[in-house]
Image (cartoon, rainbow, N blue to C red):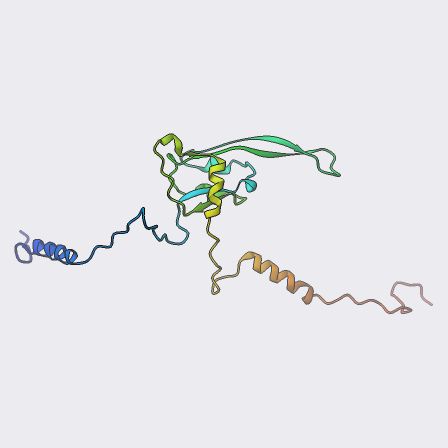
Length: 194
């Protein structure tokens, strides 16, 4: 037999003490519709589309675990001066995200190689009908205005690859000695013996 430690009813007294302590504090209710909440920086709300960066590579749609991104496109020929034949480029016709299916995992934003998708802190996009949660490229493009700028680089962290490359390129011409030119009239090796 195991002995129970403590006085009978000790748990009830502890519970009532917590309740009494919270009852005496003033509640801090935010009046949401009237007062906008202060969101943490880089909070995830809705996905925005920068249409001119989209190359219709379809990576976002293929990697989406919910299959909630729908993309249609067509090919267009572009004449390049000096080229033997015209080139083809993909033109985006339809880019829809069904937010009734989306689980906001952010995989589509991470796999986009051309930075066409961004998180925005916009969260007020509720609809009365579930069919209206299918947002097209125009609607997704309107949210680009709410995308926050990227956070500043940590001054104590490693420099970014762009900064490292620029510093390396700037140091390369200074490190190489300038080529010396032979003076006019001086003989160069490899000539006929005199």
